[in-house]
Image (cartoon, rainbow, N blue to C red; front, side):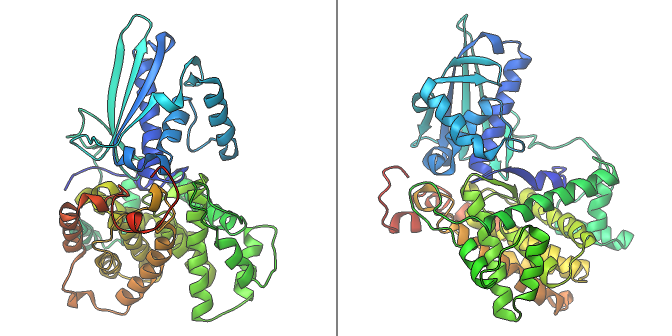
Length: 475
């Protein structure tokens, strides 16, 4: 367990799909490397850049767009602001000209086919997601740095692994385990979201915290709405048909709408009952992860592969339970803290822990957030998170063809439904009678991760990835 000081905005990051560890992390690593070169004052002297991908980044990197991410990062684009519709054109121009404009400033020769090297049989010791950059200058000097994408878009530079990215900031209510949340609650009487808010004030003013959290929700909701409008086939070669738009149209009986608010009104007026609600929760989750698989903008929650769980559960609460803006605010603060506890005590990297580290953690986060805005006590919120993760333990990561599509997209629907069920179970239970604590299940998840065969840790070398007939030549 680490003692990192993690903000909710570290857990929820705006980025581009399909993977936080294989796309967003390497993208950020490329940006950090360029920052290192610029600090040395050598950007204008660089003649060649080579990128080396290791471990899981090499084995599933093409399917996850790792090469695309590092190229865009080296080109000076940012995942938060890049116009996603321009990505194909940018990449085509680089491939055709065999040049890249480093940081958008310095044009050098660059061949994506040879200057991004996939070392599929090699893995670096610290973490399976290793990426090394080498920049050769005119005088022959070579600048080299290695980074590790450790899950959820978090990146550690080699040589700083022990620090773990820890912040020197002193928080009023430091939290490393669920027991810490209980301790601070008993001292102050505050619910989880208020404890988290007090800590967030170390980084930002209240107005900025609220504004930025609501912006996070806006991106989540946009990904749901847009995913429910777009039909077609997902990129990558598996020819997976998008389903959210067809399901949306079926549930709304063919009615269309001009915007999100009108759409929510149509959802509320076109049906009722358990099956109707269940279909919509699945639709919300499908929509987000189909967008994620299409290199569109989503929010890591806490990863891209699990980006649909929290939006689906929160959209469920807003649409069917009358959730307010204040509920959204409290939900995200609560969910973010649960994600931090898992990152510190276990992992949110599928390359380290399998899919339990992605869908399992996101489901636990969503369960706690939903329990919070449904009137749950601190103990019930933690119980909801525990129940959700307990029933994801051992979940493997075995993406077919290295693409974040099968089984990843459907798994988000299952994670969302489990989160709602876990929340309801906790709300109808007395936590004093619980035999398993959230800290117990975090520890168990980490032990399970250590025991899990590496084939089931985002390598596409086991499970569905080797049992589904595909015609792709590259996995």
